[in-house]
Length: 83
Image (cartoon, rainbow, N blue to C red; front, side, top):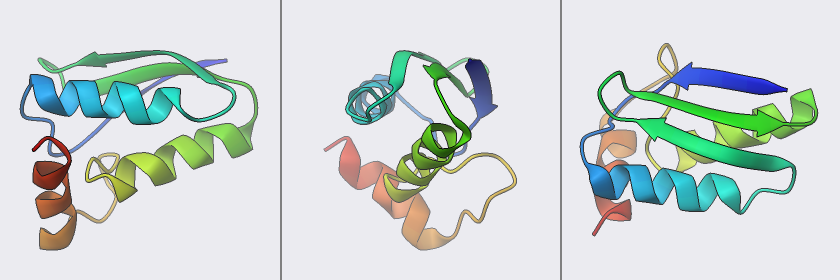
């Protein structure tokens, strides 16, 4: 299955590279694409568990899905990942 999600804190090419690298490391996640202009990430996944794992990783590295909690700690995490 393919999905596209809108994320928070996407600011630069470094953010894109971090997201692609980290999501591509997840088993059953592939074809990761990031569109900075509309702040979206799209990827292929096999099961709902794979999708939930990808959402968790996005949040953990500082790019939560729109509507999820985006506190100061999360915002700072996104900056740390691209340094």
